[in-house]
Length: 356
Image 1: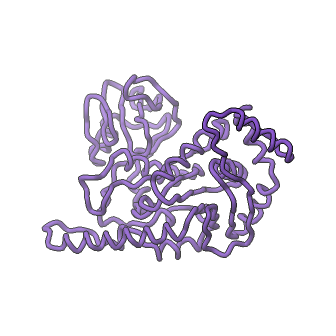
Image 2: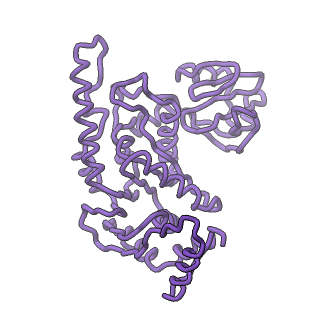
């Protein structure tokens, strides 16, 4: 059986419509008894029918990556859904040398997608939401939007990229770089995982497309793009949590709120210690409360959204709950007679077996 056929069993289930009615009333919802990839199939079914942004906050990075990979394999490409991973940009507070440019790109891509109301599905974890982000206003003021048929000169674009501190190189290989060759400008924005190739005809933008940095082959045509620079993590610019960046109709999915809240508080205490140790430094550092999110503020901000708890533990008073009687797959250790026996036993109990 193909996975898309199996997905329809979840999409057509009665809980999807009931969930949708509750969520539109901004009611908190509890999902119980989900095991393994059943969580991902339920998430796929609900996010397909329920409009708005969905952010899944897992206990740690490893769990978040597993869940993201599950959704990536389950969600149909025909949906046109943007699935994004939102990681932490560095390992320890105030340790600039440990910042990961690839992670900064992924974070900015999420913010840019939210800015353009692409209704993405976002997967994240405590360490990532701990870092506050640049405000909507700052992002808008520091983004350069380009679309097909715009009339701008290459010299003007070059000046803009210089002001955004982009580095001019022969060939772009990482975010924050651009190159100019004749009537073609390649630019690697922090808003997309692939660089853009912009072709000019005189002073008119004739073509925009993403391309592969290794093969230099075109990937996707674009009608319009946003060029976004890297924002200093510890700058004095106005910062807000990712929850403040989300639209009001967003749904927050939590697998273990208590764990996430405690983790945020632990990280915040460590950030305060780092900050205190840097007081004698000649460099000026921003105070922790301006750039990091603690557990208490996280709880306060959650009150503005519909919260879906889908783990073993729950914290919030849910308007309604759904119980899924799923159980882990038994271990057969390559003993196919045990597998056959298990499948036959399930069939005799009225279950329908699916092999994908």
